[in-house]
Amino acid sequence: PYLRWLGVYPEELNPSKVERFVLTSVNGASAEMPLDLGGFGISRFAFDDYLYRVAKNSEVEFLLDTEIEKIEFANGRFTVATGLKNYETSLVIGSFGKRSRLDVSLSRSFIRKRSPYVGVKYHIRLNDFPKDLIALHNFKNGYCGISHVENGVLNLCYLSHRDNLRKYGSISEMEKAVLFQNPHLKLIFDQAEFLFEKPETINEISFETKSPVDQHILMTGDAAGMISPLCGNGMAMAIHSAKIVSEYVSRFYHDKEYSREVLEKDYAIAWRRQFASRLWSGRQIQRLFGGVAASNLAVNLANKLQPVAKFLMKQTHGQPF
Image 1 (cartoon, rainbow, N blue to C red):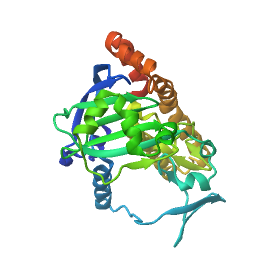
Image 2 (cartoon, rainbow, N blue to C red; image 1 turned 30 degrees about the vertical axis):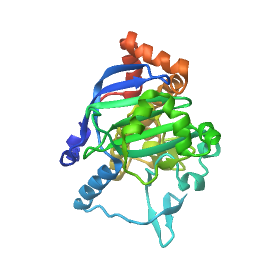
Image 3 (spheres, rainbow, N blue to C red; image 1 turned 180 degrees about the vertical axis):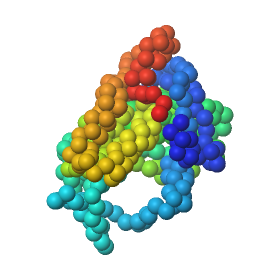
Image 4 (tube, one colour; image 1 turned 135 degrees about the vertical axis):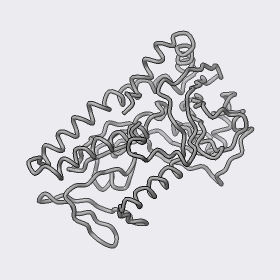
C-alpha cells in the first residue's frame, strides 16, 4: 500500500503475486499455508533500477561509481569523504545494507563479532514452479528460499553455517553433500537452468542487535537491524524504516524548534517500537530451522497447529502500512 501511495509500485515490471507458503524439513516432510499479507516478487536488480529512474525524474542527484570512505561528525555537521571529494551536510541516512566497509570505519559494535553464516544466491529458470508460491526448504545447518521474481526467473537463496562449507571445501560439493539430502532441493537443482556463471555469495551475515542511530547517523534497512531471511520481509522492513526516517527528517528541516537531539531520540524510539520485537521473534523462530528434529517440529506445527504457526508468522510480519 505504501508503494502505491507513493506512486512507485512497479506495475510495469509485472512482479509476481505471492500468496502461498510451503515449508519442508531436512528430510523432506512438507506443509503449506496461505500468506495472509502476501507479497510481490521482484529482483533487486530490476526494482533498484526502477526506483533509480523514478528518482531521476524527480531531479534527485546521484553520485554513481562513488564509494563513501569515511563519515565524521563535528560541530553539528557531517563530513562525508569519497576518494575524490568531501561533502558537508547536516544529516546523514545510513542505508548501506547488512555489512559494509562503513561499518568497519565507524567501528560499529556488531562488526567485531564473528558470524558463522554464509549466504548464496542464484537466479534460475524452473518449469512448473507456481508464480504465487514461496518455498522454504531446510537442510542441515541452513535453509533455502525460492520464489518468482520477474520475466519467468526465480530467485534461489540459501543461508548456511560456514561449517558446511568448511567441511566440503566448495559450494558445489557442499550443495551435493548437504542441500541434496532434502529431496525437494535435489529436484530443484537437478531440473533448474542456472542463469549466473557462478553464485553470488556473502560472508559474515550478522543478526546481532544494531542501533538505529549510530554516531548521529540515522540508520535504515539492514544497516539498522537485519531480520532472519526466513521471515521473508526484510525488504518491507527496509521500506518501512525509510518511511519513518523520512517523516522525522522532514520535520527536522521544516521545524526550527525540532533539534537534532530530539530527532535522534524520536527516530530511535519509533524504530524500536516498530521493529525490535519482530527482530527478536525472527531470531527465536530461526532456531526451528536447519536441524532434522527442529525442522520436523516446524512442519508439524504448520500442518497440525496452523493457528499457532500463523501467530508465529505474524510476530515477524507486522501490519500493512
